[in-house]
Image (cartoon, rainbow, N blue to C red; front, side, top):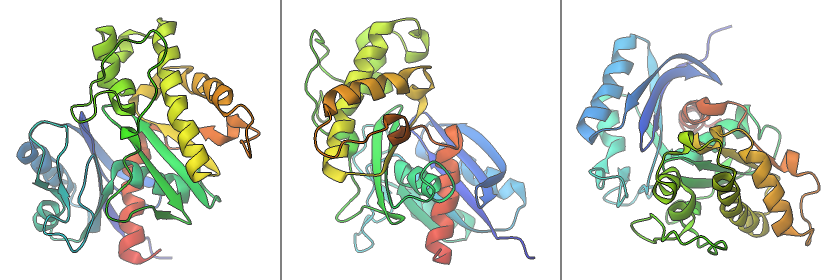
Length: 294
């Protein structure tokens, strides 16, 4: 039996980029590249792919946003007005395609991760899922029947409004909205509020209780509006042991058994099966799905 073709995969994050080559849910090569300026970061990814010597047929790119995903737009494939300094109006898709001379498929980072988990991971066998990532930013994607929910753009689940939790005086760190979900609960917000990065706050219960409260607010909204079969939670902030259980507990309080609330939150809110590789494997799924029609 002939092997499936190989695809390059790029997971473009605000702090680091993951780049790899794979087929199905398996990576045969990968590397991590710091996010600096567009020229340096994109060139480093291209050089890794070229240097592998592997015969790729396409590349999937799962990127932080906002992205222009309208094929009829003059800036299709661009990172648009992003909070990431120096990255606004970056023509990501065309630059990668031209450098590698293969077709590229671009989607928001959580869209790629969601597709990979739906096809090969924690969303396998389900019709509808939501994937949320909490790291340098907060993003979310909704899949129905294996298709990302896109219309004039992509969902911005990290920028929904949240109620200020009791005794939290932090103004919020989002440069666009201040105290939206991302402004109150993403990694930079944790650092700005508490004066130290999340990985140095592991013993501070009040830090993680507050984080769980804000995330549970968002999950209640996603549950009521989209009614997914499962919500998958990933990203660097979820490396904190116990945060997922705390989010489940706070979500149970906020759902209050109203309507068709999920009966088993341990099965409703889950981590990605592919862990920190979910975004990169999702980029493989993205390229394969769009370029092969599978």
